[in-house]
Length: 402
Image (tube, rainbow, N blue to C red; front, top):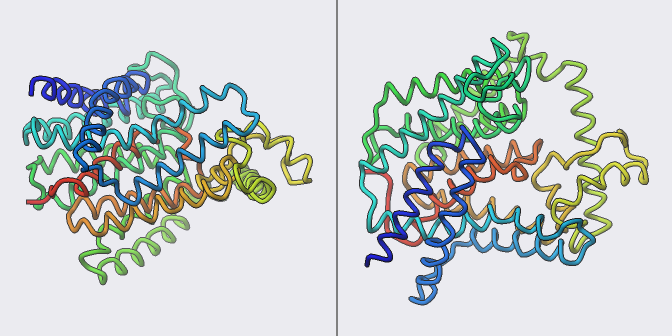
């Protein structure tokens, strides 16, 4: 009993660190990895020993992604293979966290603790966004004690505006779900605070000028209503399309974000990455080039195959094509199945968390078509933590609504 209590305290501490530092300091939030391993492995073993493992279809698909990634590294000439394999820890932590979190929720969690974890997450992310807004207009981030990461775009406390923007789309979806389903939640939250947090972070998100994150966020919104109200789902979807068209033609900054000459060149460069990634998949269908090994070879391969922008080297700017090129068609299929199964499981939850998860997954899928979000440690950590939270009901009869 004492042992499990101490393990549950480790789980709580790891989640507390994430709530505070996920958008503030990625290096500090990485302590979560260290703290969650022991309780995660212990409760995984305990459930296996008790014949209560019960992994969902999406978890098995996620493990398939990991296995194929490891095989792709082992059987390809990948530089520093152990370092690359260790990058897969984010996916595995998503699995381990399911078992650790459910044990903590059953034995030691209280409504007050959960409430303050949510508040800390919201407030600390907002502080990070405010620091980025100040940095944008004054050229200096006073919390980081460093110059602004970009002269014209917000970055929060991160060093890259892309990382910030794609992470913020997920944050805003979670924040908006707390507002929309405010009356249904077991944990009573302060509605004015939720709205204020959404507005501040929404402004900062807008000023990041990240096109793919915009699209991911907007496409996802109608899916809050898919399960309960199909009519509202279509009305909101059509309304968002009209809103996007109006904003595009009436807000010069937004139109420029999509049509500026440099942005059009960026589009062409990404298209060249899509083409070479697909060609790599066809040429290396079983194990690809090796996990995380597409980027360093993309320039040479574009030159070899006569694909445009051979001087541009980078990842595939697409979650699915990146895994196709680096782990082959089997890894590619496992990643697609992970998204599909997770969406179906979220739909079947029949609670507010499931509705939020569907919107989250759609944002992940849509924005993942134009950016390798699964390659960013900050974003991947947020995705896997949220995944673990949504998976717990498959193992314990727990709802997040009243």
